Length: 367
Image (cartoon, rainbow, N blue to C red):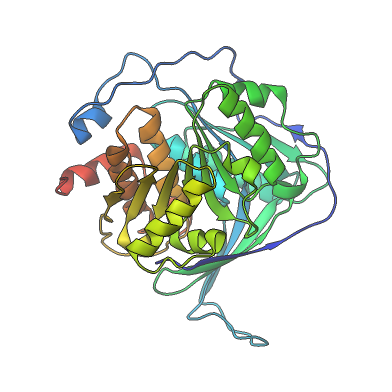
């Protein structure tokens, strides 16, 4: 199981955001797409040609400049330890999921986010542009708030601990979510959310998606406060890891039976589907009233860095869902993407492309 302990440091003040455009990508006008039907063969269905693109994936969430420090162990209280190496890379759960969607999806992927008008903001813009496939014309700069950033402490076994500074992710939404962004969300194939931006923003965009019949996936990662009931009532698929599931339900999640009971508690909160990421144990989808769907991991050749693996899994699942695949196939596709992700350092740099995922799936025995 990856250690992904996050501490949020709130910053004061709210500032309006002004939009910017990455490259020459225009804003969409009227979008009209059709979902591809599922087929019986996993590799054939993902590679099958389609006469029309799937609807867009829209990610509303965070973008952070991640400061990576490679350490042999975490420091004790009052202790200073030397890092073996360090560098800055683009990350943040929203940006990670958008980058993954951009590389895997047959249709467009949009990121709706807030960054600062600073060097880190330009780092994020450049990294997402380099990732390929992500439409950035829905990202806006908050002129009086710094870009969000994080310190990622990476251990030799690939496990990590993360400290987050919210910055523009938390402070840049004073003007609210724009009408153009809400219109885009209403035409999406799926809306992906996390908890590294204010809950009220998530509620606003989830309500727009719900009203339009767009499925909403909420990744539980981010702030460690309880998830508001208003937000959960708008979510179609809630996706925690087992640690987050334990924290949010107050229940043990050390065995599969305990995880099943905790997922049942989420059902009672109003969420019909709970997609639990189980680290080295794979994943499980708990649909209310049905038997759980379990997916083992697809073993990685070498685990280098688990940062972004959960975001890769969630985004890849959403990509397959938008393309009309059955939930079991969605989980297999996501497992393959996550397996490739952990073999490369950094979050966004580790996101696999579609061909790599399909090659991996073809190389393993799929039941």
